[in-house]
Length: 123
Image (tube, rainbow, N blue to C red; front, side, top):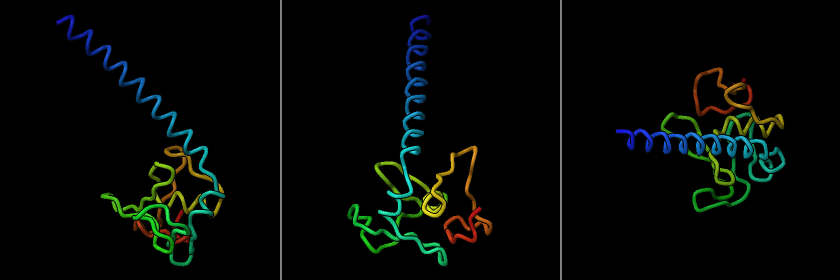
């Protein structure tokens, strides 16, 4: 029993440490994502809310196509430098130059349609 508890304590501690490092790494990536990079990668039409790939980044992200894909939760998501971002947050960064610091700050949709990213709908 003591061996099992020691094993759990060691592995749980490692898990918690790994989780802390991952959270710090994600926060650092969010800090480094800048408006100029987002504007290089995407065009945005505030009237219809569509984010368009400006450059081909992969076989799934061709120039001229709508950026991202729908997730199970019905939000549109896009991958930048190996990290997934919800499109409404990228739109917010594209327009304002500020990436919301979730969960303290959160961009949401007035109409509750999670994949409607028209500028007038986001708050």
